Amino acid sequence: ASKIIGLTGGIGSGKTTVAKFIENCGFPVYYSDDRAKEIVNDNDDLKSKIKELLGEESYLQNGLYNRKFVAEKVFNDKELLQQLNEIIHPAVRIDFEKWVNKQTQYLIFKETALLFELKLNKQCYQSILVTAEDNIRIKRVMDRDGKTYREVQSVMEQQMPEREKIKIADFLIYNNTGLDDLKDQTEKIIFEIE
Ligand code: ATP
Image: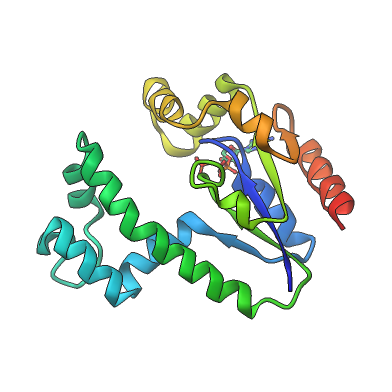
């Protein structure tokens, strides 16, 4: 069986950038957040559960997930958001397991923002946390998404504190400098795990 390595980091930490370096080294990466966005459109069982919870309007006339409607519906309703997550997360888990079964490499990676929050690290052989100073992360997301300082900061405040994640992770990548350094750190860790 393949060894699963969890790859995580908060908003703007650089985990997707690290995941791309890992792919360039020849190892497959499962992108949990991207897959979650796909399966809400592809998985009929999941679709009906979401409609049951949030109403028919959670899907558009053309059958696609109505992200805007859902976001507005769960905004400020923690309980409803939790119920939605309780439907989506197990579906992603099943999708991930199917993906794992198709892999032939001995090392495979799972990129997810919620590795520790959802205790998904329990299913991983080891975990990597990408971290950087708050101000650097905020600046990068402002540049990437055109968000305001305050908007990024408020997402950050809702995530698990960095110091908690640092305690749990097996490997740390400090992404405070350039991309060359980030790539070097990534390759060193892969080499160590191998
Ligand atoms: P999110 O959780 O918000 O999706 P992420 O952790 O996946 O974020 P990335 O998308 O990889 O983070 O990085 C955030 C932004 O910062 C991207 O635009 C990326 O190109 C840029 N970036 C990441 N690392 C560096 C770096 N060392 N130097 C310059 N830019 C970087």
